Every structure is written in C-alpha cells, then in structure tokens.
Length: 346
Length: 184
Image (cartoon, rainbow over all chains, first blue to last red; front, top):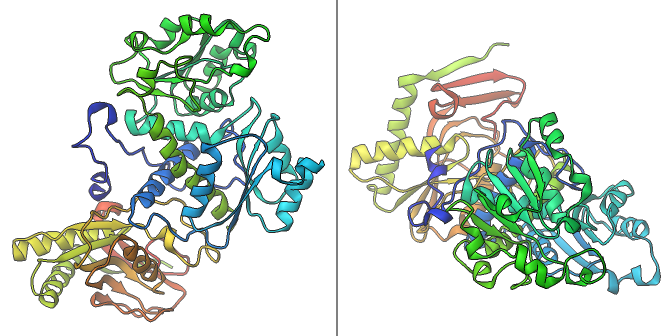
C-alpha cells in the first residue's frame, strides 16, 4: 500500500542513511514460541516478523505519547546476573512503552547472594506473577535452563559466550534500515569472536537472512568450532560464512562492518595478542574501511573501547550507526516482548 | 454454504462517491478534513474517498493509516493479530476534523481502539466515522456518521469486503459461519 511506503523519510536522507522498510513476512506467519533463547532456531519468516513488528514499535516511540497499553496486565521481570547498561535499560523501557509492569532485579541485590539457585529464583519469580523474564547470566545455557523450569516466557539477554538474540535482531534491524534486503550482502564481524555471544547470534540470524558473514580476528580469538562453515552453508542454502585472520580480505566489499569489544580483562592471560599488536593489525580505521563498499555502515554492540578495536574517528564518523543500534534496541525488544506475551494468550 | 454477493464493481464505486459527497456536505468543504484509514481495508478506502473529495472540491484532504492492534482491549480474549504494522499519521491532527474510515463496522471495539490511538497523536476538533458496511451487533455506544450500506446480519455470519488494492476485486460478500478477514 502506497500509504505505508510513504512512511519512510527517503527524500531528506543521505544515501548511507536511506531508510527502507523490511519486506513483509510470509502471510500468516505468527509467533508461536514460548521463549526467545537464540537466533539459531528462527526461520527467515520469524526473523522478518520480529523486524516488521519492530518497525511498528519504532513508530509508536515517535508518537507524541510514545507508549501504548498493549501489554497492560503483563509483568516483565529483568533478571541480570551481569552488569549491563543498554540491554537492561532497553528491556525496561520497552516493557514500559507497552504498558507492562516491570520489576528489575540485579543479582547483587537479590537472594542470589544468599545462594539461591537460578532455577529457584526463576520459580519464585513465576510464583509472584512474572509472565516474561529477560535474563542475563555469565554461564552459557543459563537461559535454556531457566526456560525449562518455568512456565514464564524467557528472553535471553545474553548467556556467557553462547547467545544474545535481541542484540543480533537489533543489528539486523539496523542493517535492514540502511541496506534493505540482506540477501547477498556481506557483513564483516571483527574482533574477539571467540568470546562473543553477539557474533554467534548474528551469524545464525544473518545466514538465515541470506547474508554472507566474514568472522575475522587473530587466530587466537577465533573459535576452532567454526572451522568448517562452508559445509554448513551448502547444507542449508543459507548465506555463506568464512572464518579468517586476514582483515583486508574480510573488509573487502563489505556492506557492514561490526567491531567487537576486545575484552581487556582477558588480555595478557595467555594466547591473545598484546593490545598494541591488536591495534596495529585489527583496529577498524578510516584507512582500512576504504576496502569496504562506499555505503558500508560501521556497527559496534558496545561498550566500545575507542582506540582499541575501533578508531575514535570511525566510532563517531559518518559511517557509524552505533547510536542507532541502541535506539533500535528498544523497538526490537518491544517487538520481542509483544510477540512472546501475545503468543502466551493464544 | 456459498457466499452471497451483495455489491460489486461500479455499484461499490458509486457508494464511495456518495460517502465522499456526504462527508463534504457535513463538513462544508474539504479544508480541515483529515481521513484516517484503519488497516487493512480502511486504508485503500480512505485513499479512494480522498480522491473522490479532490475530484469534487479540487482539494485533497491528507490521508493517514492506523493499525489498532496495539490499542485493543480484548487481546486476552481473542487471538492477537499476527503482526503489527506502523501507523502513518503525519503531524497536524490538532484542530482537524478527523474521519475514521473502515470497511465493516461490527462490535465497535476496533473504533474504540482507534479513538484511543488518535488521542495519542494529537487533539482533533472532532472525530467522525465512515464505514462501507454497518452490520450491527454493537458492544459499545458507537455509531457511524457516514454509512455505505446497512446490512442486518446474524452474529454467526460474516461480512467480507474485498478491494482491488488488497484482494484483486471490488466486492462485498455475506458469508455463513467461519470468521474471515474483514471481521471487526
């Protein structure tokens, strides 16, 4: 319908910021999952449904009254066992913008410090009326464990080095706004891939969307388990994936470049290269970005170490969409909460 | 049972032109009008009404679209819509005469949700309601200002409006039983 397409402010936007609505999901696609634990199980149609719903949520946020009452009577609990600024805050904002009741729990302030197990905590929260749990935990698999032991819906807000599905979905949302359909696009993910749940969840989602993914970093920061991706791609017909230590090759003709945080706490403890070596070989700089496509966008899941994995002039330069990612995170989390909560009512 | 065709083609086009005339007469022209089509089929209807108003008055009222999914009060009772779409309401509702446009008026709950949503966008001077078909069975104190056709129905029946823009044909059907699209 023409009236929907005119919603995109195309005329006043420079080429890099051109906004394109995502293609509509296959007719009749409905959300039926109890939990959102990772992107690896999502079909292309389900991912499209989340992104389309997020477009509607972004529109709600732009209204003079930036909230609706769709989830009135729904209780959302954020349960975070790790520090977080943007993820926890955006889950809270998303829940409030939908009219849900929100309870925020940090591990240090709860009975977790008295030794209550994750499963006990989750059961307690269900008993007091939690409908949706947004959970972050340092252990891989924590969200899946929690989901098995509660009737509440669990949305994984990051578990160890395993998965961070809402981050990947907001990354796809941001990419689609700039690049349109992601089929055939090339996305370079550069940095500490080994420890990155963001890289993993992005890989699954991007391949489902038909994008080509290059995972790049020093050999010591690349997971060995991703060594045979070519066979994976051939199996499913989805986008291909390459794992490489050659930054120039990874950046060549990339449509989007995602820098990952170098986890300083892990440096100097073994196989990782020194920070100085990393900066010299892998920092995303203007000069190195010349190999990417002219319209390429630069992304970072945050928090950034400016001057380490990304040069300050790139982080704040015209290609950077880092702040858009954060803003899009609220819309995408609204979509995730809405789909999970309404699926519970079917 | 096979669907009964109530209206199609040029007949439906005439109904839309009459509705446009009634809106102009009631408002005293086109200036200050603001048409808002309720997704899905209210949107092309609003576009057609705007085109007709422009043909008669030489001035085209602005047209917006509204998805009421996020404003419904019965999400707990019925299956929520499979997807929510962005509404497109350019600024400037303040002081306007808003005409909500929908295909079928039934319980009135969609309109209640639309009124709720409209108030989030601004404060229009007045809000009117135009529908192609009023099939009765209201559950709320809502009545249309402009009606294409009154079709008394049984609750078990369904009125289905199909439009060229969304369904490939212009027609109104009366169906027995199972809910189809066009149900509100």
